[in-house]
Length: 357
Image 1 (spheres, rainbow, N blue to C red):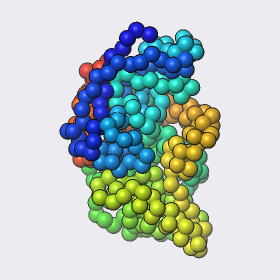
Image 2 (image 1 turned 120 degrees about the vertical axis):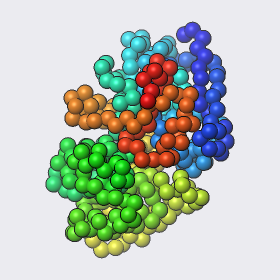
Image 3 (image 1 turned 180 degrees about the vertical axis):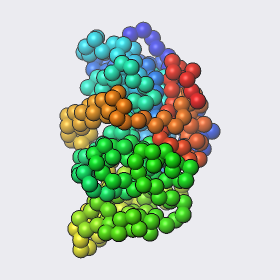
Image 4 (image 1 turned 120 degrees about the horizontal axis):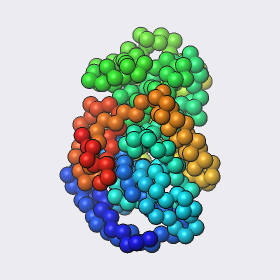
Protein backbone atom coordinates (compact mmCIF):
# COMPACT_ATOMS: atom_id res chain seq x y z
CA UNK A 1 0.00 0.00 0.00
CA UNK A 2 1.29 3.42 -0.93
CA UNK A 3 1.60 6.05 1.76
CA UNK A 4 -1.86 7.51 2.40
CA UNK A 5 -2.58 10.71 4.30
CA UNK A 6 -6.12 11.29 5.43
CA UNK A 7 -8.20 14.00 7.07
CA UNK A 8 -10.56 13.19 9.90
CA UNK A 9 -12.94 14.95 12.26
CA UNK A 10 -11.97 14.93 15.94
CA UNK A 11 -14.00 15.63 19.06
CA UNK A 12 -11.21 17.20 21.14
CA UNK A 13 -13.12 17.59 24.43
CA UNK A 14 -16.59 18.40 25.72
CA UNK A 15 -17.69 20.88 23.11
CA UNK A 16 -20.38 22.41 20.94
CA UNK A 17 -20.70 21.50 17.24
CA UNK A 18 -18.41 24.34 16.19
CA UNK A 19 -15.68 22.93 18.45
CA UNK A 20 -14.94 19.94 16.20
CA UNK A 21 -11.50 20.02 14.62
CA UNK A 22 -9.95 18.60 11.45
CA UNK A 23 -6.82 16.48 11.89
CA UNK A 24 -4.50 15.19 9.18
CA UNK A 25 -2.53 12.00 9.72
CA UNK A 26 -0.78 9.19 7.88
CA UNK A 27 -2.46 5.77 7.65
CA UNK A 28 -0.13 3.07 9.00
CA UNK A 29 0.56 -0.15 7.10
CA UNK A 30 -2.40 -2.51 7.05
CA UNK A 31 -2.42 -5.66 9.16
CA UNK A 32 -2.94 -8.96 7.33
CA UNK A 33 -6.74 -8.99 7.81
CA UNK A 34 -7.37 -5.26 7.35
CA UNK A 35 -8.91 -3.24 4.53
CA UNK A 36 -8.54 0.46 3.71
CA UNK A 37 -11.82 2.10 2.71
CA UNK A 38 -12.05 5.42 0.89
CA UNK A 39 -15.10 6.85 2.66
CA UNK A 40 -18.01 7.93 0.49
CA UNK A 41 -20.74 8.28 3.13
CA UNK A 42 -20.98 8.19 6.92
CA UNK A 43 -23.94 9.01 9.11
CA UNK A 44 -24.83 11.58 11.77
CA UNK A 45 -26.95 10.34 14.67
CA UNK A 46 -27.92 10.95 18.27
CA UNK A 47 -24.79 9.04 19.21
CA UNK A 48 -22.55 11.89 18.03
CA UNK A 49 -24.85 14.48 19.60
CA UNK A 50 -24.36 12.66 22.90
CA UNK A 51 -20.63 12.14 22.35
CA UNK A 52 -19.75 15.84 22.06
CA UNK A 53 -21.36 16.24 25.50
CA UNK A 54 -19.72 13.15 26.96
CA UNK A 55 -23.06 11.38 27.37
CA UNK A 56 -22.73 8.36 25.12
CA UNK A 57 -22.25 5.09 27.06
CA UNK A 58 -18.77 3.67 26.66
CA UNK A 59 -17.46 6.40 24.36
CA UNK A 60 -13.65 6.69 24.06
CA UNK A 61 -11.65 9.21 26.02
CA UNK A 62 -11.18 12.58 24.31
CA UNK A 63 -9.82 13.29 21.76
CA UNK A 64 -11.30 10.77 19.32
CA UNK A 65 -12.83 10.43 15.84
CA UNK A 66 -16.59 9.77 15.89
CA UNK A 67 -18.66 8.08 13.19
CA UNK A 68 -20.88 5.04 13.63
CA UNK A 69 -21.00 3.66 10.09
CA UNK A 70 -19.29 3.88 6.72
CA UNK A 71 -19.86 3.21 3.02
CA UNK A 72 -16.95 3.45 0.60
CA UNK A 73 -14.64 1.85 -1.93
CA UNK A 74 -11.91 -0.58 -0.92
CA UNK A 75 -8.66 1.22 -1.72
CA UNK A 76 -6.20 -1.40 -0.44
CA UNK A 77 -6.18 -4.75 1.37
CA UNK A 78 -3.86 -6.46 3.81
CA UNK A 79 -1.74 -9.45 2.83
CA UNK A 80 -4.29 -12.00 4.03
CA UNK A 81 -7.32 -10.48 2.28
CA UNK A 82 -8.63 -11.58 -1.12
CA UNK A 83 -7.47 -8.94 -3.61
CA UNK A 84 -10.76 -9.33 -5.49
CA UNK A 85 -12.22 -7.07 -2.80
CA UNK A 86 -10.21 -4.11 -4.10
CA UNK A 87 -12.37 -1.54 -5.84
CA UNK A 88 -15.63 -2.91 -4.46
CA UNK A 89 -18.06 -0.71 -2.56
CA UNK A 90 -18.56 -1.96 0.99
CA UNK A 91 -20.42 -0.95 4.13
CA UNK A 92 -20.08 -1.67 7.83
CA UNK A 93 -20.83 -0.47 11.33
CA UNK A 94 -17.94 1.11 13.23
CA UNK A 95 -19.29 2.88 16.38
CA UNK A 96 -16.43 5.39 16.14
CA UNK A 97 -13.74 6.28 13.62
CA UNK A 98 -15.64 6.71 10.35
CA UNK A 99 -15.77 10.52 10.18
CA UNK A 100 -12.63 10.36 8.09
CA UNK A 101 -11.65 10.33 4.43
CA UNK A 102 -10.17 6.85 4.94
CA UNK A 103 -11.27 4.14 7.35
CA UNK A 104 -9.48 0.90 8.25
CA UNK A 105 -11.61 -2.13 9.11
CA UNK A 106 -11.18 -5.90 9.31
CA UNK A 107 -12.28 -7.73 6.17
CA UNK A 108 -14.81 -10.02 7.87
CA UNK A 109 -16.77 -6.98 9.08
CA UNK A 110 -17.60 -5.77 5.58
CA UNK A 111 -20.81 -6.14 3.58
CA UNK A 112 -20.40 -5.80 -0.20
CA UNK A 113 -22.77 -3.17 -1.64
CA UNK A 114 -24.33 -3.86 -5.06
CA UNK A 115 -23.29 -1.42 -7.77
CA UNK A 116 -25.91 1.15 -8.67
CA UNK A 117 -27.01 1.97 -5.14
CA UNK A 118 -26.45 5.48 -3.79
CA UNK A 119 -23.80 5.34 -1.00
CA UNK A 120 -25.67 7.94 1.09
CA UNK A 121 -28.87 5.92 0.82
CA UNK A 122 -27.06 2.72 1.75
CA UNK A 123 -25.63 4.50 4.77
CA UNK A 124 -29.16 5.01 6.13
CA UNK A 125 -29.50 1.22 6.26
CA UNK A 126 -26.46 0.41 8.39
CA UNK A 127 -27.17 1.67 11.91
CA UNK A 128 -30.71 2.96 11.40
CA UNK A 129 -31.90 0.22 9.07
CA UNK A 130 -30.36 -2.70 10.93
CA UNK A 131 -31.57 -1.29 14.26
CA UNK A 132 -35.12 -1.05 12.88
CA UNK A 133 -35.00 -4.52 11.30
CA UNK A 134 -33.58 -6.24 14.38
CA UNK A 135 -35.99 -4.55 16.78
CA UNK A 136 -38.98 -5.37 14.64
CA UNK A 137 -38.17 -8.92 13.54
CA UNK A 138 -35.53 -10.32 15.90
CA UNK A 139 -36.62 -8.68 19.18
CA UNK A 140 -40.32 -7.73 19.18
CA UNK A 141 -41.14 -10.32 16.45
CA UNK A 142 -44.20 -8.42 15.28
CA UNK A 143 -46.96 -10.14 13.31
CA UNK A 144 -49.34 -8.98 10.57
CA UNK A 145 -52.40 -7.19 11.91
CA UNK A 146 -50.71 -5.97 15.10
CA UNK A 147 -50.55 -2.29 16.05
CA UNK A 148 -47.36 -0.56 17.18
CA UNK A 149 -46.25 2.92 18.22
CA UNK A 150 -43.06 4.35 16.76
CA UNK A 151 -41.74 7.38 18.61
CA UNK A 152 -39.78 9.74 16.38
CA UNK A 153 -41.36 8.31 13.23
CA UNK A 154 -39.72 11.02 11.13
CA UNK A 155 -36.20 10.26 12.37
CA UNK A 156 -33.44 8.07 10.99
CA UNK A 157 -34.53 4.85 12.69
CA UNK A 158 -38.20 5.81 12.73
CA UNK A 159 -38.59 6.22 8.97
CA UNK A 160 -37.13 2.76 8.33
CA UNK A 161 -39.09 1.21 11.19
CA UNK A 162 -42.39 2.56 9.88
CA UNK A 163 -41.72 1.26 6.37
CA UNK A 164 -40.58 -2.19 7.50
CA UNK A 165 -43.60 -2.53 9.78
CA UNK A 166 -45.99 -1.60 6.98
CA UNK A 167 -44.28 -4.09 4.65
CA UNK A 168 -44.92 -6.71 7.35
CA UNK A 169 -48.64 -5.85 7.50
CA UNK A 170 -48.40 -4.05 10.83
CA UNK A 171 -50.47 -0.97 11.71
CA UNK A 172 -48.28 1.96 12.79
CA UNK A 173 -49.00 4.97 14.98
CA UNK A 174 -46.10 7.38 14.48
CA UNK A 175 -45.26 10.31 16.73
CA UNK A 176 -43.44 13.25 15.17
CA UNK A 177 -43.54 17.02 14.68
CA UNK A 178 -46.25 18.58 12.52
CA UNK A 179 -43.62 19.52 9.91
CA UNK A 180 -42.89 15.81 9.43
CA UNK A 181 -46.53 14.73 9.24
CA UNK A 182 -46.95 14.59 5.47
CA UNK A 183 -43.97 12.31 4.89
CA UNK A 184 -44.77 10.09 7.88
CA UNK A 185 -48.33 9.63 6.70
CA UNK A 186 -47.10 8.95 3.17
CA UNK A 187 -45.18 5.98 4.59
CA UNK A 188 -48.45 4.57 5.94
CA UNK A 189 -48.39 5.63 9.59
CA UNK A 190 -51.15 7.32 11.57
CA UNK A 191 -49.79 10.68 12.76
CA UNK A 192 -49.66 11.76 16.41
CA UNK A 193 -48.26 15.21 17.21
CA UNK A 194 -45.93 14.79 20.17
CA UNK A 195 -45.50 18.56 20.57
CA UNK A 196 -49.05 18.67 22.02
CA UNK A 197 -47.79 16.66 25.01
CA UNK A 198 -50.86 14.43 24.72
CA UNK A 199 -49.29 11.31 23.23
CA UNK A 200 -50.75 8.74 25.70
CA UNK A 201 -54.23 10.19 25.29
CA UNK A 202 -53.96 10.37 21.50
CA UNK A 203 -52.70 6.80 21.26
CA UNK A 204 -55.42 5.54 23.59
CA UNK A 205 -58.03 7.20 21.36
CA UNK A 206 -56.63 5.29 18.37
CA UNK A 207 -56.08 1.99 20.20
CA UNK A 208 -58.39 1.83 23.25
CA UNK A 209 -57.26 -1.69 24.21
CA UNK A 210 -53.58 -0.78 24.00
CA UNK A 211 -50.94 -1.53 21.39
CA UNK A 212 -48.84 -4.60 20.74
CA UNK A 213 -45.45 -2.87 20.83
CA UNK A 214 -43.89 0.54 21.43
CA UNK A 215 -40.48 1.56 20.12
CA UNK A 216 -39.12 4.39 22.27
CA UNK A 217 -35.88 6.33 21.68
CA UNK A 218 -36.85 9.27 23.90
CA UNK A 219 -36.16 7.87 27.37
CA UNK A 220 -36.86 9.48 30.74
CA UNK A 221 -40.55 9.82 31.55
CA UNK A 222 -41.40 8.59 28.05
CA UNK A 223 -40.51 5.04 29.08
CA UNK A 224 -43.26 5.13 31.70
CA UNK A 225 -45.91 6.42 29.32
CA UNK A 226 -44.82 4.03 26.57
CA UNK A 227 -45.16 1.07 28.90
CA UNK A 228 -48.64 2.25 29.88
CA UNK A 229 -49.72 2.20 26.21
CA UNK A 230 -49.18 -1.56 25.93
CA UNK A 231 -51.99 -4.07 25.87
CA UNK A 232 -51.63 -7.15 28.11
CA UNK A 233 -48.80 -9.19 26.60
CA UNK A 234 -47.38 -6.16 24.76
CA UNK A 235 -43.68 -5.42 24.31
CA UNK A 236 -41.83 -2.12 24.83
CA UNK A 237 -38.45 -1.75 23.12
CA UNK A 238 -36.30 1.17 24.30
CA UNK A 239 -33.52 1.97 21.85
CA UNK A 240 -32.09 5.26 23.01
CA UNK A 241 -32.26 8.09 25.48
CA UNK A 242 -32.55 11.28 23.42
CA UNK A 243 -33.83 13.21 26.43
CA UNK A 244 -30.45 12.68 28.12
CA UNK A 245 -28.64 14.45 25.27
CA UNK A 246 -30.69 17.55 25.98
CA UNK A 247 -30.41 17.36 29.75
CA UNK A 248 -27.79 17.28 32.48
CA UNK A 249 -28.34 13.81 33.95
CA UNK A 250 -25.90 10.91 34.12
CA UNK A 251 -25.97 8.25 31.41
CA UNK A 252 -25.36 5.51 33.97
CA UNK A 253 -28.14 6.79 36.23
CA UNK A 254 -30.47 6.71 33.23
CA UNK A 255 -29.61 3.06 32.52
CA UNK A 256 -29.93 2.14 36.19
CA UNK A 257 -33.35 3.80 36.25
CA UNK A 258 -34.47 1.81 33.21
CA UNK A 259 -33.46 -1.53 34.70
CA UNK A 260 -35.03 -0.64 38.06
CA UNK A 261 -38.29 0.07 36.26
CA UNK A 262 -37.96 -3.16 34.30
CA UNK A 263 -37.49 -5.13 37.52
CA UNK A 264 -40.43 -3.46 39.28
CA UNK A 265 -42.79 -3.54 36.31
CA UNK A 266 -42.13 -7.21 35.61
CA UNK A 267 -44.30 -8.01 38.63
CA UNK A 268 -47.27 -6.04 37.32
CA UNK A 269 -50.23 -8.06 36.03
CA UNK A 270 -50.78 -8.33 32.29
CA UNK A 271 -47.51 -9.92 31.19
CA UNK A 272 -46.16 -6.78 29.55
CA UNK A 273 -42.48 -7.03 28.61
CA UNK A 274 -39.74 -4.49 28.05
CA UNK A 275 -36.13 -4.50 26.93
CA UNK A 276 -33.37 -2.07 26.02
CA UNK A 277 -32.11 -2.72 22.49
CA UNK A 278 -28.56 -2.01 21.43
CA UNK A 279 -27.37 -2.80 17.95
CA UNK A 280 -24.22 -4.52 19.23
CA UNK A 281 -26.07 -7.26 21.07
CA UNK A 282 -29.85 -6.88 20.80
CA UNK A 283 -30.61 -6.41 24.53
CA UNK A 284 -27.23 -7.51 25.86
CA UNK A 285 -25.19 -4.28 25.73
CA UNK A 286 -22.61 -5.54 23.29
CA UNK A 287 -22.46 -9.17 24.39
CA UNK A 288 -23.02 -10.48 20.87
CA UNK A 289 -20.11 -8.51 19.44
CA UNK A 290 -17.84 -9.57 22.31
CA UNK A 291 -18.92 -13.15 23.05
CA UNK A 292 -20.74 -14.16 19.84
CA UNK A 293 -18.91 -12.20 17.13
CA UNK A 294 -19.56 -14.79 14.42
CA UNK A 295 -23.31 -14.51 14.98
CA UNK A 296 -23.19 -10.73 15.22
CA UNK A 297 -21.38 -10.20 11.89
CA UNK A 298 -23.43 -12.91 10.18
CA UNK A 299 -26.67 -11.23 11.24
CA UNK A 300 -25.35 -7.84 10.15
CA UNK A 301 -24.64 -9.21 6.66
CA UNK A 302 -28.02 -10.96 6.47
CA UNK A 303 -29.98 -7.91 7.59
CA UNK A 304 -28.03 -5.49 5.40
CA UNK A 305 -28.50 -7.70 2.35
CA UNK A 306 -32.26 -7.87 2.98
CA UNK A 307 -32.45 -4.10 3.39
CA UNK A 308 -30.35 -3.37 0.30
CA UNK A 309 -32.56 -5.70 -1.72
CA UNK A 310 -35.66 -3.81 -0.53
CA UNK A 311 -33.93 -0.54 -1.45
CA UNK A 312 -32.88 -1.79 -4.89
CA UNK A 313 -36.39 -3.03 -5.71
CA UNK A 314 -38.05 0.19 -4.57
CA UNK A 315 -39.94 -1.40 -1.68
CA UNK A 316 -37.97 0.66 0.85
CA UNK A 317 -37.24 4.37 0.56
CA UNK A 318 -34.00 5.70 2.01
CA UNK A 319 -34.67 9.09 3.57
CA UNK A 320 -31.50 11.19 3.27
CA UNK A 321 -32.41 14.47 4.97
CA UNK A 322 -29.20 16.38 4.13
CA UNK A 323 -25.92 15.58 2.38
CA UNK A 324 -23.07 17.55 3.91
CA UNK A 325 -19.33 17.37 3.12
CA UNK A 326 -17.26 15.67 5.80
CA UNK A 327 -15.29 18.80 6.69
CA UNK A 328 -18.57 20.55 7.61
CA UNK A 329 -19.40 17.96 10.26
CA UNK A 330 -20.03 20.60 12.91
CA UNK A 331 -22.78 22.05 10.76
CA UNK A 332 -24.29 18.57 10.45
CA UNK A 333 -24.43 18.07 14.22
CA UNK A 334 -26.01 21.51 14.64
CA UNK A 335 -28.68 20.60 12.10
CA UNK A 336 -29.29 17.32 13.91
CA UNK A 337 -29.71 19.13 17.21
CA UNK A 338 -32.18 21.57 15.61
CA UNK A 339 -34.34 18.66 14.43
CA UNK A 340 -37.37 18.94 12.19
CA UNK A 341 -35.84 16.95 9.32
CA UNK A 342 -37.07 13.60 8.02
CA UNK A 343 -34.62 10.69 7.84
CA UNK A 344 -30.86 10.76 8.33
CA UNK A 345 -28.17 13.39 7.84
CA UNK A 346 -25.21 11.98 5.90
CA UNK A 347 -21.64 13.25 5.63
CA UNK A 348 -20.04 12.63 2.24
CA UNK A 349 -16.41 12.04 1.37
CA UNK A 350 -14.48 14.11 -1.20
CA UNK A 351 -15.69 12.00 -4.12
CA UNK A 352 -19.34 12.61 -3.33
CA UNK A 353 -19.26 16.02 -1.65
CA UNK A 354 -20.11 17.77 -4.91
CA UNK A 355 -23.65 16.43 -4.50
CA UNK A 356 -24.07 17.94 -1.01
CA UNK A 357 -27.28 19.87 -0.34
